Amino acid sequence: MKALIIDDEDLARAVVREHLAAHPDVEVAAECANGFEALKAAAQHQPDLIFLDIQMPKLDGFEVLELLEAEGRRPAVVFVTAYDQHALRAFEAHAVDYLLKPFSEERFDAALAKARMLHDAQTAMPPAPAAELAASARQGRPIERLVVKDGPKVTVIPLGRLDWAQAQDDYVLLRTEGKNLMKQQTLASLESQLDSSRFIRIHRSYILNLDRLVRIEQDTKEHRDAILRDGTRLPVSRAGYQRLRELWEDA
Amino acid sequence: MHPLLASRARLGAYLLGWVPIALLLAGIARSQGWTWVEAVALALPLCLLAAFLFLSAWFLCRALPLGRTVEGLGTQGMAWGLAALLMGGLWAGLAWLSAYLLAWLPGLGALPQRVATALPVLTGLGILLYLASVALSYLLLAQDRALEAERKGAELQLLAQESELKALRAQLNPHFLFNSLNSLSALTALDPARARQMCVLLSDFLRRSLGLGERRLVALREELELARAYLAIEQIRFGARLQLDWAVDPAAESALLPTLLLQPLVENAIKHGIAALPEGGTLALAAEVVDGHVILKVDNPVDAEAPAPQGLGLGLRQVHQRLLGRFGSRARFEAGVQDGVHRVTLVFPLETES
Image (cartoon, rainbow over all chains, first blue to last red; front, top):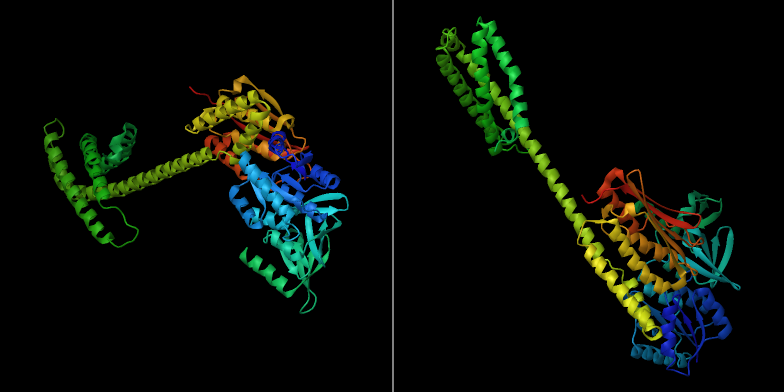
């Protein structure tokens, strides 16, 4: 088995490496100090197993997993973290193992055995998507940024810079700073990740960053448009208009 | 104890207030054909007598506190009226008595006769003065109540601050603790000597932070020592990613400041600065004294691509509030990003342990 160790702290990687030394069938293909290195190493080595820290600079563990998924890779994962243990308990339901720092050798071996088993059984039982794992760890808190794989490039979009999103079959088109980016995700799934007081589903096909809205124009009795700061017009459905009104009435 | 008798200054002011009344009384007597000697000889002792006699109104008012409604004002009015009648009569009677006593003195022989004719006027005046005293007493009682409420409010605020401090003490960052223990776990196999050093550093930090929470104010020196202990541990965790730039003017070290004010700034600098950057950076801490004020700065590099945070986080907000809670408008708090560096600046008066 080929494994990657992904953690921004040298000493934290050293512990995992030390414990792996007792398992000669697992080869450490690379050690990565951040998410971008991890993506590169994964493309190069095609690992079967990754040891993944959650809190890392630039890209967190969930975002790394999500981007690997977008490339069609899904190695077995063991999260290694000092993250809130209550949040991680939800992982057990998703058949993913985690190690809370610091951990014992017995605990490490058990996690490795479980990952091995899941890896072998993967064809029968597909692993939970990264977005789902991240959502359960966030415990209902909205996300703060989006990661998009655009060819070989990874773009991180802080949500304050997202103007609007449009559904396009299995993809969403994300409009940010004058550019369009495509991400493989449904609009409904995106909507569930966002802060519902900042981002409103104004139409079956559109989510709008409220901060960009200037006014609503009514063309005909049944047809309304949202006018944005940059002059863009987006359609507003009757249900979308209702949601906007509820938000204003609560404010 | 009557509030006006409680302090000499108050008593003096009160008696001074009686001087114009005594002059008025003498003036009235003079207009009725009394000689100056007669008028002054009676007005002065009589007013002195009234000044103390009518203080009794305060005890009556304390026993009959004013309600929020007009109900009950009837019975209270009756009580005031009755007391006023009694005290007015008593005062006039005493005036009559003193006139007889003063009559022994030369030139005042006609005083008893004069007072006898003025008795109804004196009684009426006594009643009015007593009622004025009732009004003054209620004023004093209301002032007392306001002061009491203010004191209670301040006490509550103090309690709230104390509980906030307790919460801060309990707020030992678990993420920091577990990551440090994990580094320790790695070092036990890699470098036992460094592992032992880490144990000592961690114990040092824990002991200091537990000890500091017991006090409301500490010298900056102790806050700096805590920060140093904390950063020594983080330097083992982050290795070359964490560089320190320490510039502390010894003159600033004895300055007193609210406990655990610096620690959240340093922890923030690590969490949002160093830990969020793959290559890390330099955490700069500077303290200097300028014009009797301490200027404390904590700088850390930030990820240029990350969006600027909207407003202050909870940690910084608490620091801001606690700084102003202690020093008020004499202190200043600034936080912001410039040229990729996040800087928090605290300015507060240099006050040392006397």
